[in-house]
Length: 276
Length: 237
Image 1: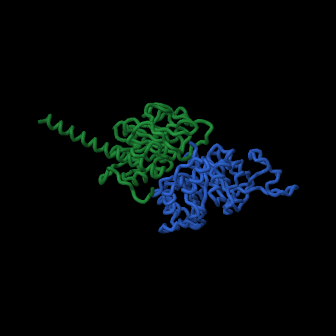
Image 2: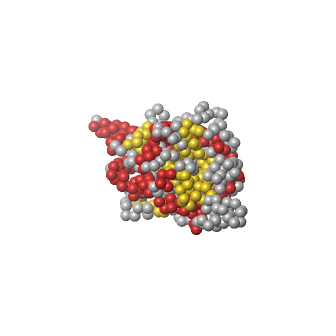
Image 3: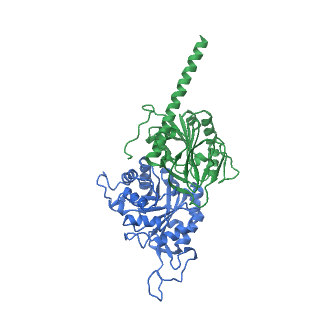
């Protein structure tokens, strides 16, 4: 059967989880390995670590975290952030990561996707895309969803389009998000991690039009990310956004909802999930 | 559920040694760590002697069939794997490690697999996303010590775009755009298309069963050896 995965995302800086973590029974709420094991026990289907370490000691602390995670966590996990070469990917995979996420480096040099896929298989290449709606001034004055002159033929959404950003959302690169996703799949991406920058942190729900457009354009699974504030948002991501997996961070980290509650909500809405 | 404490095995104080074939592809550490977690002594190794002396052998694999087959040949581990199978010791192929046990794969035409299982590995049915990258429920078709205690429909984690065609060795299927072969067995040669090392507690239970199979097999071989020694002694007298 087709099942939708529920994926908590952990932001990690210098080997520590950042953003609040609200499990009272954790010995060390900042330890990514303890939190990962907790999510595994709760029934998470996969985990994604996003390494936001800026300093040059990133490599060693991250590898150590991956090693420790691989000793205690027996569900798949992806590590993204700072992967720029095949060697970067090799180190993470050898340390125990199942997949690597690439974002800025893939935009800078798309052939990196093929290089990693050729070396280790498409199943371990997650191309992360940060996308923002193109805001186009229109005569009708009806705002950002008004008809645009920059229609992407492949977006299949009529008037809407989204632009790709890199460097943690700071740099617009002029690529159409739907076209970039399709190209990334052609190059060897095994999965797309799609984050709406408009929705990230808002708790207003996924950008469902973006998610549906990218999912329709991709033959590989798409993980919806950015904006989850309620369990219904997860349901909408699967049913309306046609996402193959739904990612959330704060609703889980701050103890607002458990993985089990998320899965119950999805199942109750008719979305097949692995029971927690 | 919980990942706090390693599970006990029937192997007890004398855990079996399981060689995990290291031919340099992808994430091999997971299989090694998961086997250790359920009580085995796991050796990630490319050493023919270590493999020959191990109580059981695991052939993991990710990526393309052809590339994995080539890497096996370059490291000489194809011979080591075939020797292990011929010796009758328990053997477990995982994911592409399962596919490599067949004759060939549509993924890499013209490249011969290890031929331990007859048949071809074929692309998944169209109409579903590929790879299948998700948890799915098994339908167990036959009793097997590998799935002991797991119920009829355990959940396992899959990542693959190709799967073996059904054969007499079929052990389990899952549904993904049609029926997909999820596990196979011929005597003590086991193969899983899913990743037990990535399937949480259910997957660890599969590996724990494999470790127990390895311990029991070692015990049986030791008994046979002792009987033969006794027999030889009597004849000598």
